[in-house]
Image 1 (cartoon, helix red, strand yellow):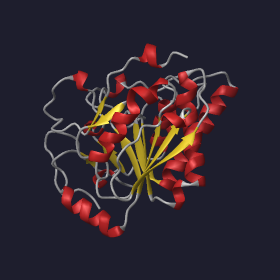
Image 2 (cartoon, rainbow, N blue to C red):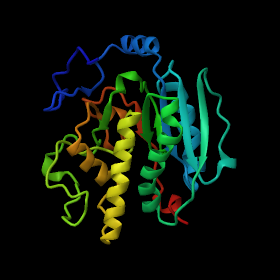
Image 3 (tube, rainbow, N blue to C red):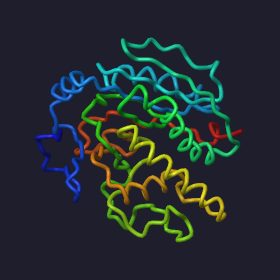
Length: 278
C-alpha cells in the first residue's frame, strides 16, 4: 500500500508514481500491523571483510536490533573472511544471524563489485526459501531511528544524501560509452549503500550488475563508481516501485537540513586509508 499523507517541502512522488518515503508521510503503526499480520520476513545482507569487521559490524548489528524492521522476523546474512571474529549479539525473537565465509580480494573495488554476485547466489541458495524481502546495506553505518516496513516494496532505491538536492547535471553517472554502466541522463542518483525489494527483484538487480561488471572487465573498463554505477543503470531501466529519502542513509557531515526531520541510518566515521589497506 502507499503512503496517504504528503509533505509540501519535498518531492514525495516520482514521475512514474512511485512514493518517495519521508517522515510524516506514513502511519508507522499501520505498516507494522499490516506486515505482522501478513507474516512478512526480511533478509538483511551485509559484508564485513578485512578491517571493516572489527571497525563496524558490532555497532551495525546492535543498532539494527533496535531499529531495523522491529517486530518482524529478520535474518542477518553476514559475509566475511573472518567468521570466527563475528561478535556475539543478543537477538530478539524470530531474528537470527547466518554467517557466510567469502574470499577477501586485494582491491577494495573488487570486494565491492563481487558482492553483487555473492548476494545473487545466496538469494538463490538460501534467502528465497526463508524471506520475501531482501535489504542490502553497507556495514559502515549505524541505525539511529526507525527503519521499518514502510521501506518495503517490490523494488526499492535510495536517494543519495549528497545529490538529492542538486541539479541532475551534477549527478556522477558513468559517462564512459565503453562501459555497460554508461548513462547520459537519469531520474535520480541512487546510493548503493542501501537497496532492496522482493528477493526476485534483488536477485535480478545483483545478477545484472555483476554481468555488467564482468562485461566491462572483458573490455578493460571499470565503471566510475563500480557497482553503484551499474546499480544506477539498472534502476534507470527498471524503475523502483518505492524510493527512500536520504533519511534512510544520512551523512551527519552534511549538516542540519530542515527537510531531514529524522536520520534513520547514518554514515559512520570513515578511515578509508586504514580500513582498505591490505
